[in-house]
Amino acid sequence: MSTSDFPIPSSDQRITEIQSALDDAVAAGGGPGIVAELRDGRAQPWFGTAGVADLTTGGERRPGEHFRIGSFTKAFTGTVVLRLAAEGRLTLDDTVAQWLPGVVEEHLGADGTKITMRRLLNHTSGLPDAILGQEPPPSEEPGERFIYSKINYSLAGMIVEGATGATLAEEIERHITRPLRLTGTYLPGADNTMRDPHARHYSKLGETGAGAEIHDVTEMDLSWAGAAGGMVSTTSDLQRFLRALLSGRLLPPAQQDEMFTTVSTEGAGWVPHTRYGLGVYSQRLSDGVTLWGGGGYIHGSMSYAMGDREGARTLVVNLNGDWNDFHETFSDLYEPGFRTATSPNPSS
Image (cartoon, rainbow, N blue to C red; front, side, top):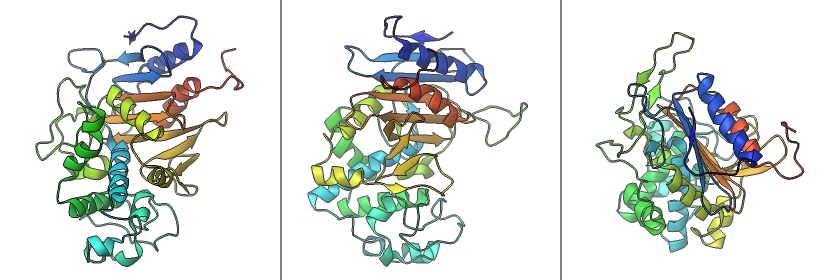
């Protein structure tokens, strides 16, 4: 049974369609439970759920739950880098060789003098998608094309720590979570804890087919994700962060322009209809509407946090499972949520 914690008039077709998409995502076996929070100028946000937070107890998902946000962590890391650039602590033209001499040469066979901070953040460094320290594919020439890579943000996080003498978690707190009062948002330390309350996180660990076993991975050590995907948050905190970022309240104008200057992702085999900035990306819906923000996939959790360019309407979604075809669910949720007055309405 689905629930809504904030009543919305029954005549609101947008809400009806979003709730239907939540119900469908769970009913189709796409995950244990899903939540969505929409903010669009109402006196109260709308919060909807379907499915469960815990397969053992059957407890429903609810507001205030913590969950792993995966790659949307990159938006936080990118924001910290840009704020440090505004402070003069580093520049986007600084190279990896300046801050981390020999690291990419030794571990990745790349030329750190050609990889700038900007190329790390927009994934044009030429570095492969792997975990730093693992055996990766060969590196490519920097600046040639978009390759979505966890290594880029692992290096960016290391540079933040070298430039400040503080941990990335401390810099995220200084620049973002403390000023915005995001009390449920943090980068876990070595203890890898997830604060209460939280949904259980479930994974099929890459297995496919009807008989694939579902595993509870809530306690899995995901510290390797770090600056690229290790953060925990809540729907309301992600709403506050995303709206502050889109509206220009977190970055000075020059850095805001840098963050939202994008490169093409075409041909990269990544998310369709997207362009990537410095930790955020744009995605075009089928009716031509373009949204901004990001998504995150990590063991046991899939999330989206996207809105219009000014942050006037934003929708945050989390599923506590990782085997859903979330690109299809994304369309089902976000197209009604951001349908314009002139867009075709499939239910009309």
